[in-house]
Length: 361
Ligand SMILES: *Cc1c(COP(=O)(O)O)cnc(C)c1O
Image 1: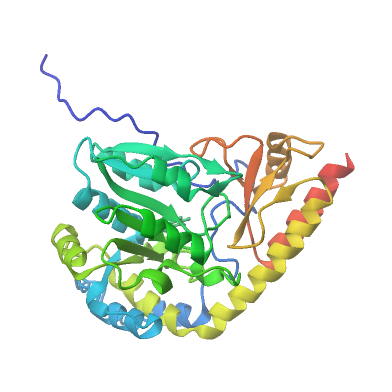
Image 2: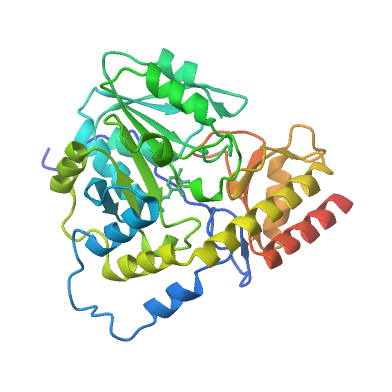
């Protein structure tokens, strides 16, 4: 045969939360955990500046941004690496740590990019069962073998919304073999006001075998600009910098991210908004037999076991009215549930109104 050949990919491609509906112009997108309050006004001002010098290559080291991050989070700028979304940092980690036949452990229902990037580099993905849709440290530890190189963990977890407490997370790291990298994805850390929670960065900033992921896609409202960062030991960061594409983070994203970190007013407004509406929506849905996780990040995992409607029926009827939730069936493989992102006031009220009308039928 003379046809070209490439690697066999036994991988299900990532399907993002739906963002449009045929024939409908106005939609309410509650499917991707994006910022409910949009972009900070201070960021808008910075990126509408006419002198952005788009013809210049960006700073490949994201130096100013790393400075700002280290100031805000009181951490070492030399231990930060920026990426085109935390996505790209996950990809670089897999390239650095995983050879074919190595093993990466991920919780059963976890962020899909961990398994996708692990598989691309030929590693074996090992799934650790969850208990009641919560990550189980004991199940993770059971899955460790000689070939285990990485354990990926989002805390709080997406799409389940549950989280390991500070003590559970510390215990897990202690019990994990010290030559396994524990990746703690703090994507939703800023939203978390639960008293038994601590972010990965707070707990493990000086630990050699822990790597922290952070993103500007969620509370900072910059999903479209693709920017996030990782925090690890000097040794790991130096190696990642060799792998990193030279100009991976664009200049506009770097400027926007710096400004977004400074806008404390916007961040605290986002946190307040989220707790208020997550609580309101949780209680509201409970009246219809739809239960959900304890309020944590900017989304709820809705459970339809005790509801008179199936998740699929609810999803379809919302969609007819232009409201999109995240199906948890494809990819995550969770049946009869839906993930709901907390939206703006207007979006949440619209969602509640349409829900009432669906249940009136
Ligand atoms: C949304 C999300 C991210 C963010 O990914 P980006 O590539 O930074 O947009 C990372 N991890 C988890 C668990 C998420 O839910």
